Length: 307
Image 1 (cartoon, rainbow, N blue to C red):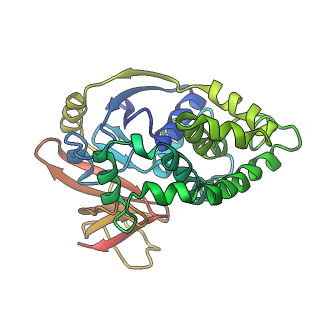
Image 2 (cartoon, rainbow, N blue to C red):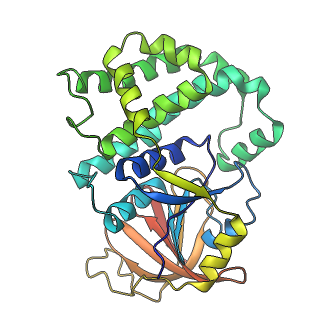
């Protein structure tokens, strides 16, 4: 069965950039399906069952959601070169990147470019963050406070690079570099004046950014979204049902469950439990456009409820 990597993303997505750098580290060849940055996403929903966040990775009829799990799957399927030397806390670092550092980066961008953002994008993000209205004036007023926070987060990396190492863990790039790189790339891509002003204090980080950027994205070729749907429909998932002897809630294969993110974009995806462990849960579901697929989620940062 084909193990072709199909990556559903858009090029301005910072979370997608994290995975694209992983593709570069591993020298992978992949297919690029460009999806809309806002809903509706008519050719993604049949695959994910409602999960709307970006990116999503597809391998046949197996659908991987969230960068945390996508990276785990890539390391398992393409173990050479290894990019996760310390599998535990490397993923804890992702929470720093994806949550507090990301939350300090977003207002610096939207507080500056808010008036240029299409109304449809604002409404879409308000649906993703139902408790946070897209208020450009509030974000603009908060820029000084978030510059302080962004500077503090950037200084973490400058200190890590303080002994002259090339990358976060030493002479070779790892997943830790991809985690750390995301928010620097995001700010520099969308509002370079603020990024450049803040980075003047951090010469080691600035040089590191150039080294990570040079890694590239591996080799990709475009794929039409309809072709991706057809591939899923023709394939069979490789996921095998197995019990989790240590599940603290006693779940077992065949249980009807729903999985949802615990921060934003909390759209539940319902299905039949195939397997779970401490870091992954896979659920089987069907859709007329793709037939039977198995959708994989990480456990950290996601909630599992009875459906």
